[in-house]
Image (cartoon, one colour):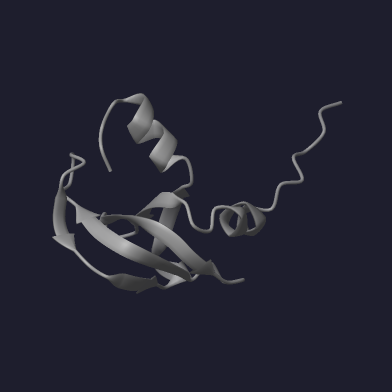
Length: 91
């Protein structure tokens, strides 16, 4: 019998604090930045945040610090820094 994974997504997000993450919002917007804080409702604070142009990894707008409401988040890529490094792209 297969055993279900007991990983808690919020725990994984808390472990990603101070790492570069990519957050995709429900409206299609993609933001990258250093995860500074998270809470139990998946509200996130990103520092040195940039909005990415749709379909590319080019920044459109740069922000200092951004609070993202958890209910607006579609998904969070916790390995974004590793993915970009493996593709030879600079963050």
